[in-house]
Image (tube, rainbow, N blue to C red; front, top):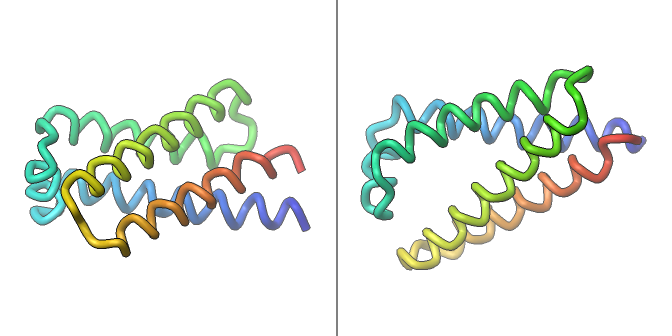
Length: 115
């Protein structure tokens, strides 16, 4: 059961990271939204690349645990940064709620990894 929870939560967070990474490069709305939040363009590119790398690290079963820890830490830092940026920008509560849900999924994935 715990193994199923691990894979479901890992697939969900990886899917979000991959979709987010894709939009950072190919969605005009996302690119403009990040500019509105005050982030420089190089930061958008860095995040897009790092999110894609995190997806690979999280989904490859034989990846060393230290690499997975860095991927979880990076994803967590991204979610916290996004939360602060959206709150400062006075965006909708739905975005804030979504970020908390994603953080909970990330934590679930991390703490069921060895199950």
